[in-house]
Image (cartoon, rainbow, N blue to C red):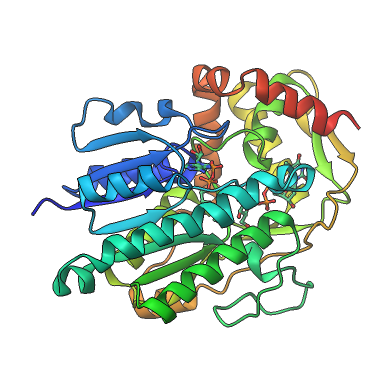
Amino acid sequence: MENTILVTGGAGFIGSNFILQRMERESDSVVNLDKLTYAGHLRNLEAIANDRRHEFVHGDIADRGLVRGLLERRRPQAIVHFAAESHVDRSIRGPDDFIRTNVDGTFALLEEVRTYWGGLTEQERADFRFLHVSTDEVFGSLDPEDPAFSETTPYAPNSPYAASKAASDHFVRAYHHTYGLPVLTTNCSNNYGRFQFPEKLIPLVILNARAGKPLPVYGDGQNVRDWLYVEDHCEAIATVLTRGRVGQTYNIGGWNEKRNIDIVEIICDIVDEMAGRRGSSRRGLITFVKDRPGHDRRYAMDANKIERELGWRPLETFESGIRKTVRWYLENEEWVRDVTSGSYRQWIETHYSS
Ligand code: NAD
Ligand code: DAU
């Protein structure tokens, strides 16, 4: 039988990187269900536009009839669930979409998958996997000396985004414990790399630095994030999908904690080097702005379990990954122009005007 996986949110940042990597390495067919919100772009998948193993379906994970029909028609052996509203600042300004997609959407998907899975043969049921892609933000915030989050750290989500992801994680867990659905959950730290929508810190700073615009740093810039190159995240997901123990959760991280201000300064220096200086260093563009409400101080991931059990470790260093990323954004002006349409400009104006 042909091997088919269903990917949700495969036109977004991580989902598109995952599909491109997967199709390069495996012979699988991929069905990609994506609503194409402001964050989803088929351009990300241009490289496989003529590859018949990829089928794009434009739709909402919360549309149960659509999901049911898709599962019956394509009969996937696995689901990799990326689709979500993913930007913390947007969740603070308007949480509704986060509940609709991250909570209600995940629930709708789980219900349809449960029915589909229940109709498979015993062997197919045993081989089936539902992999839920989640975040380190469900664990809350760390003080400087606290140990990193592990798989047993209690959940303490602080933003509407984190709360919606935590809710979806709990539903996924419950579907395993109650119905026996073979689920896997991954909780990952901050990703960076090509195709990340420029509302997020790293691409926003690269593009503003290139254009000579202010570089907005929230609060005192001392908040810490653990950065992971997106292709390493995709490898980790593929590893968990094939070798992860059913019902388990795996933390994924880059062993790479950095303060926001350090990230911004590193990017300024690389853009100065690659795009040429215009007089003074771009560090002069750094502008401290009003803090994000409830801004988590520090995230750090203990990714020992996935290394010990499944042999995954990040391969890219931050030094090489960030250079690749800056170069990609500088060389892909057309992509940037395409994705930064009217609605993007409106978000930037509203969010940073105060
Ligand atoms: P993204 O915002 O770039 O992409 C999300 C994709 O989901 C878009 O293509 C969008 O069109 C699609 N989508 C949104 N609502 C949908 C719906 N109702 N139905 C179908 N498709 C829908 O997000 P990302 O950064 O690629 O994140 C992907 C997943 O990984 C999310 O679940 C996120 O919580 C998780 N995650 C992200 C990071 C990170 O640093 N970006 C880190 C850890 C975990
Ligand atoms: O930790 C994983 C999470 O990482 C994912 O679950 C989210 O989907 C993803 O968006 C990301 O969340 P963050 O809030 O950490 O990422 P963001 O790029 O928005 O911000 C990174 C840090 O930079 C954070 O401390 C806020 C700060 N920041 C962000 C922006 C957009 C600024 O100082 N200025 C900015 O303009």
